[in-house]
Image (cartoon, rainbow over all chains, first blue to last red; front, side, top):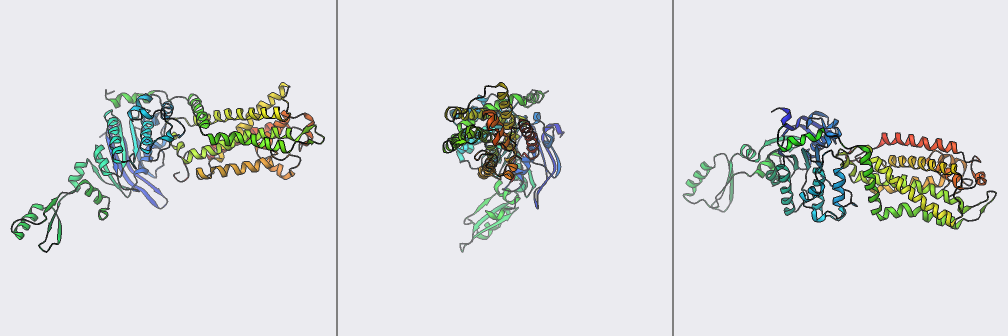
Length: 286
Length: 281
């Protein structure tokens, strides 16, 4: 893959805060037009990585190219091509939604139509409300509006749905899909597995500052979710479980032992969540 | 060039990004709008000097011996100077610290907005509120406390440069001090306390002929003392010069001191200004 097919190209990225290594050698390649999910528990290094891509944090080592430029030396023209949705919202409380979106549009050489962006994020009914009067979900939608007002080629979303109720999260997903359909390259960090699975074309699992797995959710499940768990109940009532690569053979053996029906039989393949928890070393937390 | 949505939008990067001056104007309008929508801030900024003028000028109203003026008259230019510093130094020092803490600055930094536009916007806000504040105090001073407007054009010219230099110096000092508070919560105390002290040692609350010399010397290191002195020179009769430390208005030294603060304040801002707070720095 040549580098101009990549919106984001990261090699050997490292960042330390004092004694803590936040990012410990990350490689990333995000293709143009792709929705890429960076999945990992809190403190895995997701936000630090995204902040480096935004040009808002320095790095200790590694090569980073975002839309053909090093973010550390990003010019205003470069900034106008990258949209950012921050983890914590920060819009001016006293202004209305429409005033804010219109004002931010002035910063960009070729902004989208503010009215169109307000309705894109579903805030038409709130366009003339002061920002301080919006709910948390509505503010998040405004954040997205401000992230896309410049018509970015690349949108960086840092944990955009943290604190959302399930319905608000679904609506937010629809919005992200809409932007992706328009051809925007999207990098999204999340610690919600279902979110990464629902939105991302490809995803990378980050743990302790490293990428521990990368691919489509199906491929990850196939590669790391090997084997199956066979569960049954012994005649004395004790539940038993066995993890095996050959579940059929285990079931056949059980059939011989029980001579017929196996009490409480259950054969399960690992879910993506099992894979994720194993990869991020949180297996025991379930 | 491909015909995909991404391909066509790449062309946007060739377009010129909007200029700092235009965005600065638009930010100025926005800043003024935001300012007047925060009622507490409006009251805090505008009412303080007016209330203090009313209190001081009403309590102390005797003739000041050998000067041909009353104590009330003396408080009018003093409170105008204080008002100019309030709308520039205090208002910027607190509001920028809050904007930094609430990550408004970081968000702006993530857009192609030119940094100069942010400061231009603040300058428009300070000019607007500073002119308004000064006009209010002057109105109160001329109607209630017997201050006469200068009839001489050169005095108005002096007033103009003293106002502009004083406001600019104090505004830059305000931007610089905004980097000191660690959070929005501590911003008010960090900014208000030094302002209060400066008002005492610069001849705002207490006449310069009463303040100990060493205190005045401390005050002379900051712009407020010179702003006060300049405004006395503009709005008080020449017979009041005897109260001054030097026995004259010293317009030349005032111009030098205020201009030095504009240059020094700018350097201080450029050296210390942070878009991010310290915790995430």
